[in-house]
Image 1: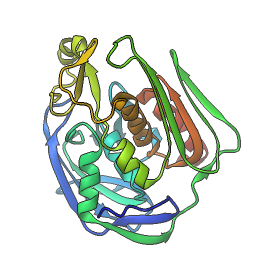
Image 2: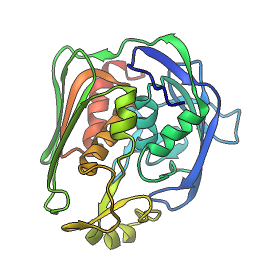
Image 3: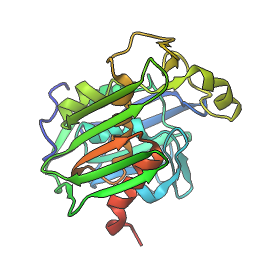
Length: 283
């Protein structure tokens, strides 16, 4: 399917199941995810191969860790690096989806959301009628962490913007904004890959992180140049930050707001998702 929805006014699920497998960024382990249609609104997580296991709806209060990725603890099931998959689900307009997972990390694929978009296209979308209204804000919300901050202000549509600032000349200062629709997500954000820095690799691996990272699933910056060009966009790093932001906000759903992130992080993003979800947290 290439004729993506024009807006987020409709509710959608998948027309059929689809699976993807691959290496996890941090664990280095082979993992597998099957996406299935659902008749319940939200994203529901269960174990692959255990059909009787209960499905639990994803929510910001399940965030367990935000070091270099977003990790959830959903009752007994731990699941890391959920952000690219959730960005693909929310970005393409899917509102009702079951996720069945084998392993404790979502496959990284090529480091972007493109592989998940292709999987969704392979399965196809099935319309469910008009979706629940997007969450609207009554007043601005801001969260801060170190030098970074994230602000959401009332708006009549979904707009995302981000700015980054790195000392490495290959990135430097970048800013990108867009009005989010399924079509703009697929073309402008989904292909943007995760990135890291050559001088941090040894330390991160020694800490048990990025065990599955490689030059075919992450951009690596070495000061004034990239080890594995070409980039898909001249400003691919800041676009990937917006991809991560969308994936983390997907835990609560798309807010009808203008959201701006400066030096965003998974900690900031999930704090905003929790702030947006506060009135609706399960007791």
